[in-house]
Each structure stands twice: as structure tokens, then as C-alpha cells.
Amino acid sequence: MNGTGLVRQPSSRLAEGIITHITRIPVDVSLAQVQHAAYVAALSASGWAVEQAPAADDCPDSVFIEDTVVICEDLAVLTRPGAPARRAEVAGVAQAVGGLGLRTATIEEPGTLEGGDVLQVGHTVYVGRGARTNGDGIRQLRSLLAPLGRTVIAVPLGNVLHLKSAVTALPDGTFLLLPGLVPTELFPAVRPVDEEGGCHVVPLGGDRVMIAASAPRTAEMLDSLGFTPVVVDISEFEKLEGCVTCLSVLRS
Image (cartoon, rainbow, N blue to C red; front, side, top):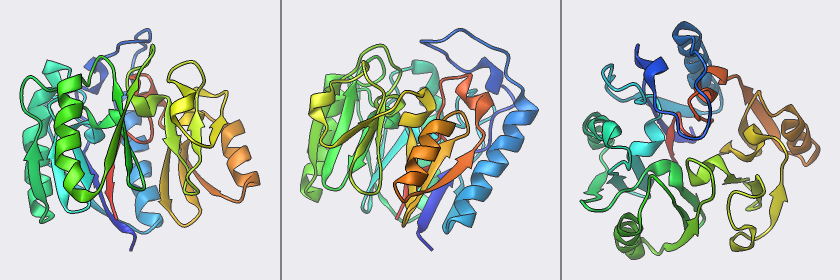
């Protein structure tokens, strides 16, 4: 097994989820549930032991579990989402990570931090500074991760929800990046992409890389580079600014 993947079932109120930079489009909740099940199956098929956090049906965005916790080695940092409506999601995730035997720490007021803004690549941790994560949240995370030998680099965000909405890393340490949303010069070895869904990927171990079905050209490019794309359809979550990273928290 590669490790544990923490996920959370979609709320029946998913269609009420927050949107910031896009126009609202009706969400098919039944289809979203089918897509989520396929996403979980893809994790399992790639060697991840999937654990379910307690459902939070009153929290429309709760399926986007990545935003509520950042796991680094044996430490789970419970976040304080920048969207106040999402803060009720954290308690159930705290329960789940406690069951995994992890140490926990918490981002405290006035700090805000969402896991979608945290990109860990080796011993470097890039953290997006935008509408959901503030400077105090970044300072707290830097202090918590320093004993683990991590260097935190703050990244100012443009017109984008989270850092990982604009850039993620491949297993070889190169970065898939959608130009114009983050300062390219802060990242080494950038591979620009021209599909929005192409800049968010989840390394699944070995050469396997999860990518959304909305980015076929990027998936073809990854295949040509010797990676194995694991393609999942997450169209209903993309209507809420979600991406493949948002729907799980992986711990090797």
C-alpha cells in the first residue's frame, strides 16, 4: 500500500457550495456522488487505503476535505478556513485524523489557512496568500513545520481560489502551472499548461498521476513523458471550483 487517503462523502447540499471566481452552474448531486465513488475507487486501485471522515451533510463544501487539514509526516495541522461558513467542517476531520494516530496542531485566530493553498514538494512547502489564507496563517504553519525541517515559501495569488488551483507538482519535481495566476519565478522547472484542469494533479505513487478528464491534452502530454495518467471525471465538483486535489488528503 502507498498509504492512507482521507476522503469525505458529498453533502446532499453540495449544489449550495461556495463559488468565488466563476458563474454558478447547476450541480447534479446524484452524478457528483457517482463521480466521487469513482474517484475513491481510483485511489484504492492505485494502492491507497481509503478512510472516510464523518459525513457533514449540513456543510455543502465538506467533500473538499483537503482544505481542512494539512498532514506533514506525523503531524496533522487542523486549519481555520478563510471562508467562515466552512469552519464547521474541521471538527469531523479532527476526529478522523485522531483515529489515524497523528499528532495534531491547530491554526488559531486571527490566522486563516486552507489546505488547498498548501503544496508540499520534498522539504519545501509552498503556501498561497490569497482570499482564503492570510499572513498570520502562513506564519503559524511555518512555525509548526520548521521542527520537521520544512521551508515555507509564501506565494501571492492572482485571480484564483487556491494555490493548487493554479499549480501542482509531478513526481519528478517539475511543476504544472497555469500561467498568469501565480509568480512563475517562485517555482523551479515549470511546465506551463493551457488547460485549467491540467494544472492540478495528484501523484499516486510511482509514475501514476491522477488528473481530471477535463484536461485531455495535458493527460496526453504526461503520458508522452512517461507518466501514467489516472483520469477521473469530476465535472460536478469543477462547477464549484473543485479539482482532483480537493477531494482527498493523502498520507504516505
